[in-house]
Structure formats: structure tokens, C-alpha cells
Image 1 (cartoon, helix red, strand yellow):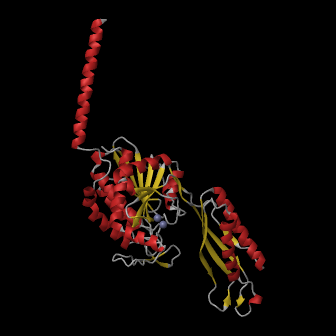
Image 2 (cartoon, rainbow, N blue to C red; image 1 turned 30 degrees about the vertical axis):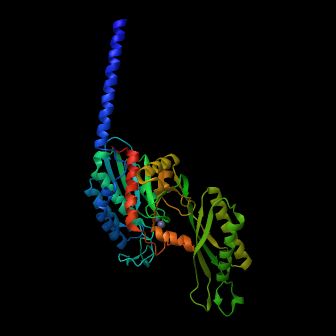
Image 3 (cartoon, rainbow, N blue to C red; image 1 turned 90 degrees about the horizontal axis):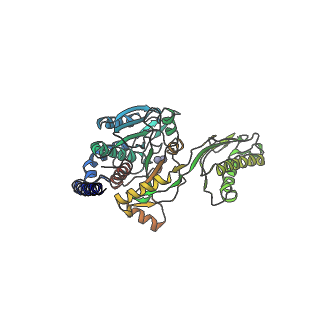
Length: 450
Ligand SMILES: [Zn+2]
Ligand SMILES: [Zn+2]
């Protein structure tokens, strides 16, 4: 038995020495080239002029939902040049760019391609002057008023860094350029067109949106429900038109519609439990042609924001009941027509383990002070669709406001312009740079940089 023991001891010593050397060489190897977890400022600065040029080009040339052909073509050409396998026309105008780079997880990074029918009033030297025809054939000015141009440019910068350093990570990267976010049907169009079946199904889906409540470059995260459900509701009220001087011979739908607008305010303030978030906004009211004619009908367009199906159902029922009751009180010749979709936008649900994992990696990469937990919002986002399709997802926000302007706004109580405002002008240089760093950091966390 004794010789065996000696042999065992000798083997153990050999192993210990071998492990010690392995550890030493790993340490010296690590010192020569650290694991790539966050791009350096120099790496970002090197690509910035190219990315800023793209941003200015996209800002000058915005396109409406499902009309984003030039935008998609520009991004597709860039992705091809970087070595991605690119498919265009997914979900009408969407693009999917895939880079298979060895074993590892499949991660999708999504940007939005579309702009809004808003007339730009930023006064920027590269402001949009674009006017196009919308789907109804009416002329409308177009502006990247939600910052999707900033998202696309950061996305392109992140793709470039990942492609140029593909020896430093492994896995499959799927870059998705999604159309028609503002109409809330672009994500579902891509999914219906096989986003998760014709291409590798992602293990994780990520996106980043600009934000008016945080200083430029600050990342905000919120695990769990983060962006609201959204329903577009239309109410048409019917009256009996006639001469403005003889209202007693008419049923005035303008007065009826005005009563409905005011009565709907009590749905939120009197019928809803204040701990459940609800917004009912009447964003559009149209009726009549001139002052001396009482019209036959008035049309109201509403946006309803909620967080749960129960509250949504109750709120929509209250809107129907209120409209009907006011019409009856006015003696309207017909019940109002209330059109609400069977299913509105789903709420964005940020997968908590994924969100917290990304937040920890971002704090490490960008610094604790640059990454904050933020409150949920009543805005909605069709990024929710990817989570609904069963892929753990995280939509993070990035502050895009000059810190001095934000501080001044907090002093005066007058908020800075926000996304969808004609004056929304992100503080683009620090925001773009931080967005690229953040996106690459998130991807490297999930891929395990090397
Ligand atoms: Zn938007
Ligand atoms: Zn947006």
C-alpha cells in the first residue's frame, strides 16, 4: 500500500504545481489583454465622427411608419459592409442582420426606424424640412421627434464595434431594425413575418430609448412592468345640425362632445383606485366647418393608458357608458359610436433577472453614478411584443438632456421638451457615445467578452 500512497502524493504535487502555473499564466495573460467588458472612450471616439454623420443624415431625412425604405437601405448597407448576413423587407420595411460568431447565446438588439408626423421646431442646423404624404394621402411634415434617429445611430455604432472586435466575444448577434414603432404594429409585423422562426430565436432581446428626465448619458432601468398598455379609442357623437342662430331646432354635437370631454375626466379621478395608474387623454376633437353652422357630428380621438387588463376593461367600459349617458341626456338622435381595439398595446415587461444583470454590468462598466433605477412610465412601446413572444427582454432608457438645462427646468418647474415634442433635441454627442458604450456593455455581459 505504501508505494501507492507515495505515487498518489507525487501525482497530487504534480497537479498542484501544474494548477499553480496555469493560474500564473492566466494572470499574466490577463494583464496583457483584459477581458473586453466595456468599450474604452478611445474606442468610442474612434468611430464617433462616422456615427455622428449618420445621425445627422437620419435626422435630416426622417420617414413615417412603414415608409422607412431609405432609412432601412442605409442601415442594411452598413450592416453588410460589417460582415452581417442581412435580410431586408421583414415585416414590410424591417431589417434583420445576423452575425454568427461561434458558440454562445443568441442576443437581439433592436432599434426603431420610423419618425413622427410632427413639424420640427428645434432650430437645429440639421433640422428636418421633410413633408410627405401619409397613408391617407394628406401632406404632413415629418420629424424624428422620438429620437429613433439617435437609437439607430447608436445601434449602428454598437454593431460596428462588435463586428470589428469579433475575436473578443462569441455567440450570435441579431441586429433588428424595426419599422412602425409609433403605430405600434411594427414589432408584430416582424414577428408575423418570421422574426423568431426564419432567423435564430434570441435568448434575450434588448433595446434602449432616449429620455427627457435624466442627464445625457445616464442609463435608467426598471425591472418588471415598465411601459403602459395603450389603446386608441374613437368616439363619434351624433347630433342634428342646423343654423347657428336657431340652436333650439338642433341637437348640438359640439356641446355634447364638450360634455363628454369633461365627464371623462372623472373616470380617472372618481372611478379608479388611485394606486392603479390610468391616463385618459382626448388628443383630438373635430367637428363642424364654420362658426354659423351647427354640425351633425363630432369625432373625438382618445389615448387610454393602463397597466392591467382588469383596469383597462373597466376604464373602456366607463368611457362607453359616459359617452352613451351624455348622448342620452342631450337627446341625441343616435347612440355615439365608440370604437376601441379588442387588444391594445401590451405593457413592456422588463425581465427582472435580465434587467438586474444588465444594470450590474452597466454600473461596473459606466460607473455607479451613471446607472439609476427609474420609475415606470405611462408611455407605451411595442417592444413589449418580443417579451410576449416568450423572449426575456429588457428596454432600458438613456437620458438625453444637457444636465444644465435639466437643472434649470427643475428650478423653474417648467419641464424640458420631451419625446414627441417638435422641440425634442437630444444632447446628441454625450448621449450617442454613452448609448454605444451601454449597448456594447450589455451585449458583452451576455456574450461573455474575452
Ligand atoms: Zn415615440
Ligand atoms: Zn420612441
